[in-house]
Image 1 (cartoon, rainbow, N blue to C red):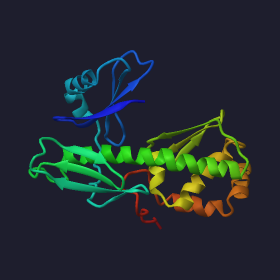
Image 2: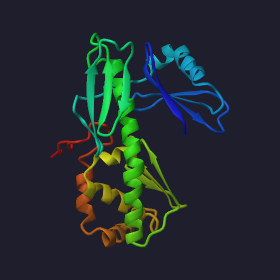
Image 3: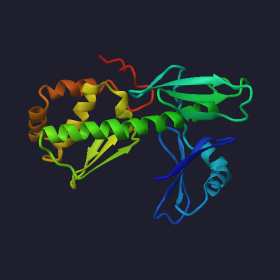
Length: 242
């Protein structure tokens, strides 16, 4: 699905998606506070940006969670690190995703923790994660499915706030793009978890028996997964609660 990100005064980063089959422009504020516009494929991106700007007052009234500040040098997936660069010639916040870096360029008058700078950084990090997840997770899913002689229908990457993956009754598997932030053994756990749903859709005893057949001590991995949450700042597990 084609998309572009815009920096809009009073709002921050707005990501505009073009979707085939859409007949109208739709504005949403996700649980993580990100602003998204979905619009018909044929409509110009500027129309979506203008629509979001016209709804500035409505957006301001929506619950906006306090988000963690993304620090300089933060790892982004398996291949990138985030870097902020002050540029006296920068007229607006710009981003680029290179071989090993996610670079956010901004005027020296703006600090790295500025809302606009952080919003642009998040959008660029999402782009880097999606590219990595599509390639790396897709390859690993295919490898594990072939090794365990399991067939699935399709594979997709989505940014989800509460689940690491899903598998429906038609054997379509979806993996969270944040998954590429986790250690490889936990990535394998999630993939094998979803592959187990090819045989057993629910989470009853027979499901865990199936998963244990593919991954011994699966419940140990399950406990470790609970120390993580789907977010950009995921390099270190959250502290366990006694």
